[in-house]
Amino acid sequence: MLVVLLLATVATGSLAQSDEEKARRELQQLQRDIQSIQKEISSAATRKNKLQRQLRDAEVQLGKLQRDMAQNRQAMSASNEELSSLEQQRGKLEQSRERQQARIATELRTAWQMGQQGQIKVLLSQENPHTVARTMGYYRYFFEARNKLLGQYRETLQQLQAVEQGIARTLQQLEQQQLALEQQQQQLIKGKTARAQAVASLADSIRDKGQQLERKELDRKELEKLLQAIKEAVVNLQVPENYQAFKGAKGKMPWPISGKHSNRFGKPRNEGKMVWQGINIPAREGTTVRAIHHGRVVYSDWLRGSGLLLIIDHGDGYMSLYAHNQSLLREVGEWVSAGTPISTVGDSGGLDRAALYFEIRHQGKPTNPANWCRG
Image (cartoon, rainbow, N blue to C red; front, side):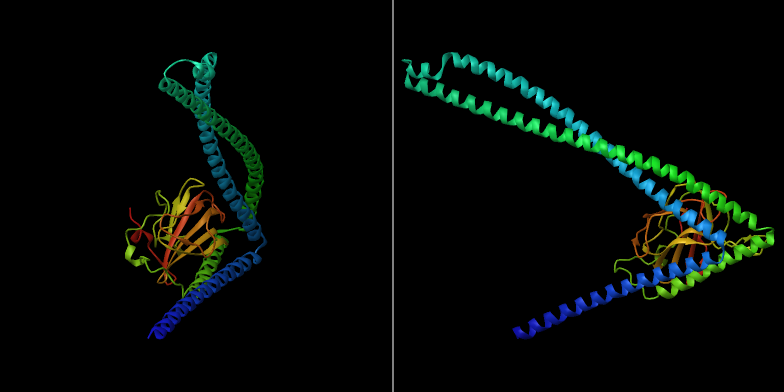
């Protein structure tokens, strides 16, 4: 019976390990599929038009640079906090050192006075042996206390030295971070100039409203093609056991950013030739965009007409799209929760001013975000 139980336990463990390995392989394959789609769609879109390629290159470079600058600023903030903490530690240690120095000076004066009497005189005195024993005990207590005080003083000096070294390292780190930030700012100026030139050239290439409409139609087709490819790739996407279904959060999800909407879902646009399939939310450049629900990032790259685009798959055929970003903060394959920072607001894709374009889709079809997000 024991052998049978052992064999059953081993078999169960092997099965669980097999399932885990299978899930890991499926996830790796999913990530490869999504990355392949990402590269194929992005490359195909940019090959069609040299000006679009120039715009893409400029905006992708700007997005990475602005993300790096934000990370650098966060690092500088952390360094400043560390420096402030170290300076507070130094102040406390200096106060301890001064108090200990004063006590040591007092102890040395006492020791000198006791030395004038000397232990030998006490021993040779004709006093009661019990009195002599108490006096000698006091001598030992005094010397032990003095040695302990000196040991604490040495430890304080060592701690103070370590803190001073930490301050010096942090100051050097801050100097390097500041230098890197200044270099990044210079690159940012060049990048914005290149991006502005690309936008201007692209605008000059479109001569009339008919061409503008044609361009927007091409942009829409590129997005639809991308969404269909992603839909096919993530059909078997597994979600965690404790996952709350997207449909169950309807009407309770937060908006990705706060702000007044500049359009209404389903209303005509471009002289009635097209309709709004999402919501446009103007906002200050660099505003943090947050995921509206738990899901996996399935696209994080530049796409014609959408600029720097991030798409999250929420399972059961639901996806949320965040377009025209300044920078993308998440990579393909990452799991995110509601409220997780995923990007920053920008004007990529050729917008005139910073705004977030936001869509929710079910089985590839646009659905009104106002029905899903509260407020």
